[in-house]
Length: 465
Image (cartoon, rainbow, N blue to C red):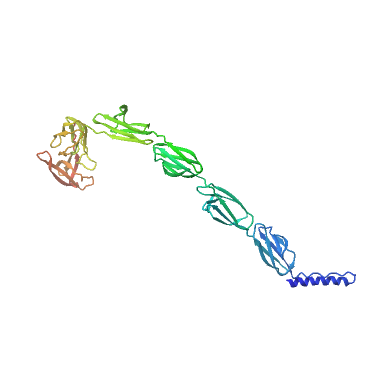
């Protein structure tokens, strides 16, 4: 390249000297040979970069050069805020060569430290670490951050990156610790300071100076809230007198409807409910005909509901009977009680009968049906106060069905539990033997083919009261 430039300069001098000695007559200059020339189309991202070739500023991107001799050129692109870029461009005769560069932003490294070290650094609301903190590749521009550490006043800092030189920021922190002492009546209240839990009262610890929101809570007491100011190197004391919350009281009895007295005052009958009542002990008394009087102490705790249902102890007795089969009449002391009913899955077993609210002493149970064998039984039962007397099973023979065979024979008795309309064989209890104690000792049963039976007739075994 240097040879070419030198040659061009020499030719220019020779041409000038020749003009001095040439005749004054005008001659036409020969046309310049452009066959060995080309051009460059220089662009950048972003546009506007300064173009320098051989130390000379040509223009800014985008730029198309005038024809230049074919050769390799070093093109420098520079722009504020970006690192310079160098492009080797080879110019080809008779062509326009594209040269493009993506400029890299000029970044800087910033180190943030504090005295003492270990402070939290936040930028744009995000934690970026504890001091010393290294921030690399920061683009040109303005920045800010906060530096804070427990026991020290928060510092807000800002800086500006103007070039790629590293920046060191040292932040001195100032101690701002005071003491906060909390107590409460009653003790063991849960502590919350600035929304964070700190255990129970009594409590004492160091806090940053400034205002802090205190909240104390305890079951049965109204929450205690206060904003206190902690002063550096001083103790701030808070003694909270917590206000007792009322409780509620719900009382009932089993059975319900008992007369209710609280601390000797008549409150009607159960159930009873009082939504607001002072905490404390209350004497509860309940009375009801047929039941023993009940008296107990009920404690209502602050701010808590108290709900109790008391079971009254009956001073009456009851009798439970098992009388089989269904259809037998039951009398108590000569008064009709009920007629036995069949259990859903059995033709021979009756539902148990319970006779309640009986006075203590002897009672006579009479079971009868004129169609049964025997047709009547009397049983004496002694009932104890509040006791349930279970009477041994009482059994009768009570025919309730007639079977008529096709050959003319007729039989009365009871169909067994195995009987169904679809059965091909019918099990039938024809008769029973009774012991001297009046209990069934044995049952005589037969089995008939369905095809041999002309008719199955239910008998009327109802015996009026």
